[in-house]
Length: 257
Image 1 (tube, rainbow, N blue to C red):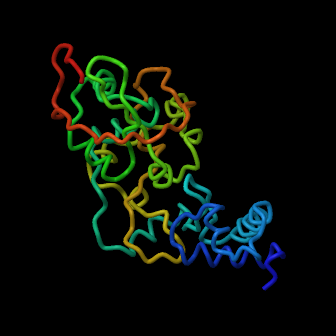
Image 2 (image 1 turned 45 degrees about the vertical axis):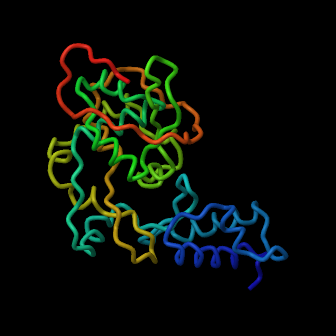
């Protein structure tokens, strides 16, 4: 195999991605070569472009997400591919989806700020679940009395929702132009399309429950104007996430700590 030939290199990178079953960064792919044979980053990208073009018209595609590149089944095949697995789709409450959407668009944001917008207390289990799934993280503390934790999304969140970066989140203006999804999509079991995995072609792992982030946010078009989408990534804080109050209607003006 001639590793200086982009065509040969594209075939090798395809083998890497099929075997990995997860996203691989450019740096990680370079580490898989001996130092003497390691291709330059520009050559790796050229080979990846050849691989991407070779997927045209196929059932799978090369997709770049936050953690790197992966081969995945195209979304149009999700209703059928989802039948490969027996487990029932994950149920997501509307409260969880609203909380996640607010963190994605307003990050860094505190629980108190989320509660002010939603009008109800944030259930401690919601925050715990989002932290356990590694969709959000604590990135610091707001410099106000009580020093409340600030939450932001993670690379895992971006990978899960098939996003390369936060700039790919749809604007709220665009979401308001979409036809709203039925409430069923939020309160009952997700449809096969929403639950199907953006699967790696070679991975035989158990599927991750997925849903379309545009559909997730289409119901949130009454959210306040001016939510930020141009923030930068923040370092991870060392402090553990604090427990939260129950998800009950907030009466009056609660104090947030």
